[in-house]
Image (cartoon, rainbow, N blue to C red; front, side, top):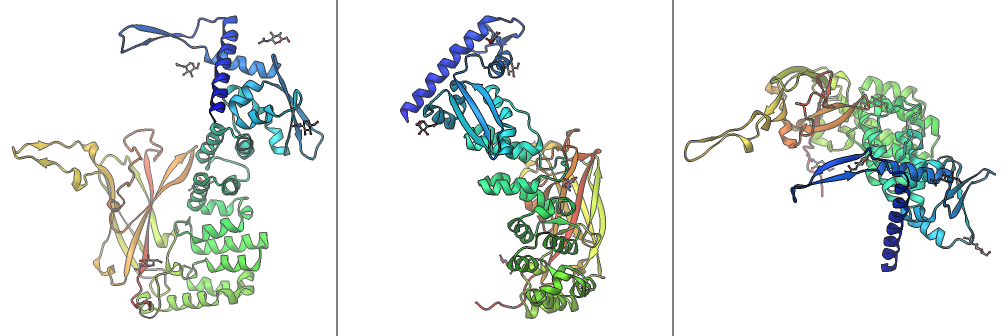
Amino acid sequence: MAGGARGNLVVRIQIGVLFAAFCSRSPTSSAAQKVENPLEGSTTTLINHSQALVQRLEALLTHGNGSDVSLRVQTMHSDEVKVFQAHTLVLSLQSEIFEELLLHRNASTLVLREPADCASVFDKFIRYLYCGEISILLEQAITLHKLASKYRVLPLQQGLSHYMMQHLSSDSLHGHVVSWYHYAKQIGDVALRDSCLQYLSWNLSSVIQSGEWPAVSDDLLLSLLQRSDLVLHSELELFGAVENWIGNNQPMGTTIENALRSLRYAMIPPQHLFRLQRQSPVLLKYHEAVRDLLFMSFQFHSASPLQLAKYFDVNCSLFTPRNYLSPAWGSPWFINNPTRDDRSTSFQTQLGPSGHDSTKKVTWNALFSPRWLPVSIRPVYTDHGAVQTIRGEDGRPRIIVTPATSSVDFAGVSFQKTVIVTARQQGKVVVRNVYNFHQSTEENGDFLMQADLHRRGSEYLIDNSLHLHIIVKPTYHSLIKTKK
Ligand SMILES: *[C@@H]1O[C@H](CO)[C@@H](O)[C@H](O)[C@H]1NC(C)=O
Ligand SMILES: *[C@@H]1O[C@H](CO)[C@@H](O)[C@H](O)[C@H]1NC(C)=O
Ligand SMILES: *[C@@H]1O[C@H](CO)[C@@H](O)[C@H](O)[C@H]1NC(C)=O
Ligand SMILES: *[C@@H]1O[C@H](CO)[C@@H](O)[C@H](O)[C@H]1NC(C)=O
Ligand SMILES: *[C@@H]1O[C@H](CO)[C@@H](O)[C@H](O)[C@H]1NC(C)=O
């Protein structure tokens, strides 16, 4: 290993000599700049020709001057060959894989075999090795990442992962997040995989309607269906999407059964369940696989969930709502100039999703405070009667949601509130945060902490408004003791 380190050192020194030789040939005087040196109190002048240096390195690659190795990039299953007059020094500096390959080569030519997609962007890749910069198109991200991984160019790998996480919401003809998810999973990039999964979960309605939906893998579909934080119109919409996916993919029976068993039928109104039972081809075919869930759901719809809770375990996903945007569950709330003062709103939701409760309405009051002061930073009175002053900016945003009448607080049910916060990303309005709480966002600790609502250009302000959607989800507790 010490030998390797020394090798690197030598490489760097040589590069310094090489660059000095290039730079001294055509001195330019434009980029001189004065810099204060606070330690010595004197002024040093920085001469900065790094941009010109990068251009010279690029010229080195395009003209091949001083080249000591010729790279032949062969496209697999094709006669296509691209040749680059390259420099072992630069390649080895950037990639230990190249260093290894170049050490063991026989002749002045190194042959590389690449699949067609990689071969087609190889010139971009090798230019990055010389110049340290690269311009990326959405559809090239995976291919470039494959090359960066194969040749172990870590900064490029990281740069591309970061690029992908920043461009989940970018426009593309057929969508790209599903393929990025599959790639991230395959190479074990957990951060990228989770970002993709969260993006798909929080934007499911759009994904379902996009051309990407049929390309979702079995594994991704089942991962999505497990989640309670999916943001979509309704469970019925999800049923339609699963049906459509099954129709397109014709997967194995067990996959179909697992997918169908992950749907939350109790969240679908009974009149729709009747229709699905009779008319959905998938449900007709796999009725046996979900018979118990449908039966349970019809029981749920037929009486108060509290009655059900006396006899059955209701603490399971079948009875747990996801983030439904349909009006029965909550309401959007756009707050103009959110830092100005406190705002309030009222909205109605169904008492619960069961057929027994869905026509009963509950009115909710919501209060938004832009600069609410948590107890921990309230003004402090000292022994001398002095008040430690607190500036308004020390406050944090808070929302509390309370029922307008107290009768809804019945035993065995709690109403979980969810606030969905949207923000602008690449010109698109996307879900940025999902906060769950019971009464106050205080319970979260970090509600809108990073939103920077004071700043005019905050990505959380859309036409100067904060875009929220509040959802109220009844969750039921089992009243029976489960045998253990
Ligand atoms: C030198 O110039 C380049 C661009 O011309 C700039 O990106 C870089 O930050 C500069 N370096 C310093 C030390 O100022
Ligand atoms: C590269 O070589 C060509 C001739 O082969 C020469 O014209 C050119 O000036 C050289 N470029 C550099 C940067 O040395
Ligand atoms: C080098 O040459 C030997 C003998 O000609 C051959 O067996 C070997 O595969 C070559 N290695 C490379 C990396 O081309
Ligand atoms: C969802 O994705 C689509 C397409 O990428 C985009 O147009 C839309 O703004 C996104 N919506 C949300 C809520 O994230
Ligand atoms: C519901 O079940 C989950 C685990 O499945 C458990 O963590 C939670 O405490 C249960 N809640 C109640 C109220 O029983």
